[in-house]
Image (tube, rainbow, N blue to C red; front, side, top):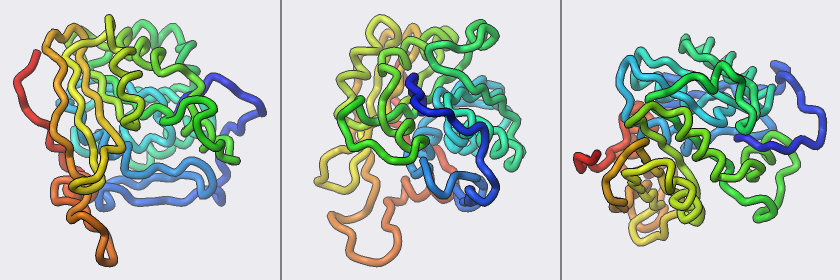
Amino acid sequence: MICRCRTVAEPQSFAQDELSQDAFLGGQIKLLQPKSGYRAGVDPVLLAAAVNARSGDSVLELGCGAGQAFLCLAARVSGLSIVGVELQPAYAELARRNAAVNAVPAEVVAADLSNLPATLRQRRFSHVIANPPYYRAGAHSQAKDPGRRTALGEGTPLELWFDVAARRLTPKGYLHMIQRVERLPDMIAAAQGRLGSLEVLPLSPRVGRATELVILRARKGGRAEFRLHAPLVMHEGVAHHRDGEDYSPAVRAVLREGSALPWPDVGRN
């Protein structure tokens, strides 16, 4: 969600009539989000479901938007200490409202990724999660809405996301990041010298279809070899033949029940 460039004055909050309230995880989470602008989809839900957090862990989300990912994680794992960072003040304020609506204790900081507050730079976290903008600057048609434009178009280099994550993680802490598959080489390069034990879980729309998204798991101080897992197939069948959703059972359990995403257990360090 974070972009370093600002061309116009940004609103500090959304008016109530600019918002809709949407349900996630089968109604476990109520999410206020703008009717016009960046609206969360399934990607942050999948990201949250991949995080191997336990009660008592601390979690930092970089570019938290309206808070969907950390709220979904909190719904699955109780007792987390959560901090979100979001550049856009209106979305940061919305994340605070959503945390309150869902009774999730969370601290949300409105800040630029490249200039975090000193108090935050002194803290370390068990987990860092991130859903950075998918497209390099100039690599896609820009959205008219400023919030959506910031969410989709990269302004802060991907390498900086990894640098901030590595600095904020405790030893043996985990980074989880969801990105488009074409950015995988950039992610692997950015992790070098910062994080180890890289694992990639491809997310394929259907059997026989090319992967579009990947989830990267990396560990601070990890020493295991790189591992590319078999794809998680999102939908049943080779094509959509009927009305309604056709998610695979594992993905349906994640999206509708708040289950953990099935991550291959390979006992790595």
